[in-house]
Length: 59
Image (cartoon, rainbow, N blue to C red):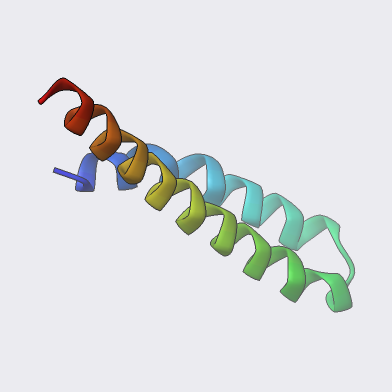
């Protein structure tokens, strides 16, 4: 199940987003939050893709 990957990746990216939101100016805050969200989803889907490649190699 991929829900486990989701909950493994969520806390570090959520903490990073919150830290960036409080430490950056209001102009850069929206870019930091959207960048953090994009980095989360890219990491999530790359992890799933790599896992599928490994499973295909084993089969």
